[in-house]
Length: 578
Image (cartoon, rainbow, N blue to C red; front, side, top):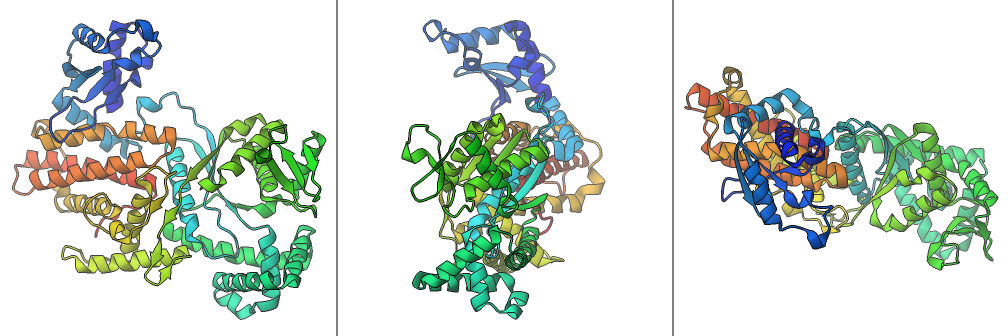
């Protein structure tokens, strides 16, 4: 695999440069494939070797590259050495490349790319990922979709790299909105409606009580009193709240199952209503808590009264706030999981909130606050169904399934499917995830139904179609051919391009593991699918001699295997028929 070749090149370089091979491995990168010309397989950036040089005495990079190339020799692994702009390029022996890559893909299976030299010396860590976090007693809003799929991707990637991952869903299950909802249900709620369609009914009650509270100060007062009773542990208020919470989680689990997502822990702000009082006591004991004229409690993170650095941690009536509960949750999780990293996946609007939470933990004396990270993301605009504005995720999932079923029905090549509804949902979800993951997570983007469902071009539908098509090849020809591999039969440019691209998978995984951006993997898989589509047209299996057919089948099987691995990391379940 790539790491074997990298190590071999690094060994030769280390003898010439008198540097340990380990120091050179990450400077040797696989060369992206080119449609115009055949390129080398690996390149060494001479610039990366000179990073520590003083700029004034820095030698000419091109001259350095040529000098270095002259000192290197071809061997059984490297068949050609050349130079490019500031690089030394290495071409791998073609038969060895074919044999090593295909053998490694089949042997490593779902671990292909993850056993690379690039990840060596990476100790297993304890990682907590908090994501999704919808608000209890409200239907699952589409605004939580990005946090859900991004958090799932990060957890999948960390797990694949051998880390011990805990997936936490930190529900918005406490706060003033429950004062409103509790009061609203007592005034406008119906038990039978709560039984038959709980979240829809609670949503209607919430809308109605908000409307009434805007005109009627008495309702706002009742809501405030209800939340105070909750904070004081009133049994009747708590039992109504608990029902809302249980019914909500049941509904959420059903939606997560449709998305193929699970959690290790359903936590929530409510868990920390008592512990947040301990946080306030600790802040007070350290002299960090300040009372305002209004009776609220604040912490000045700047130490000099800068208004933008003031964080409110308690209301005037003594009840806790979101920030206080987040601090209590972080402390509790450290006690419980002793994590090496904790990642919060929320929209970029909460950037300041998390900066303040982490800063507060730090001034409270918790050095591990540096292990906490916020992964922010942008806003999706224009996600509407045919009925108009979308509020709920379930409406989007139903719309995806319906549109995909209609698309599949209109395509002549669609196979008879055992479960067309399930296939349509999986393909539709792939379409949604790929559109979301193609750009930088921090960017806002405009949602487009038409773009989501294109079967050609850079879409999730195209990825699923490629996977199903390659699976069909294996089903048709598989058993007779997948035995011996004659590497001499895979020397066409289309085969070499695929092999070179397969070689780069570990680098792509490494990049995503560094910046937690799924777009590297998405772009890689789309290129792989385009390469496979070209090869499928030109590298025929039917009517080819057995050794040629067998070699090509090996190649397509490797492509399908890597495609499936990458899709699963992104949170997509590959389909075998379409």
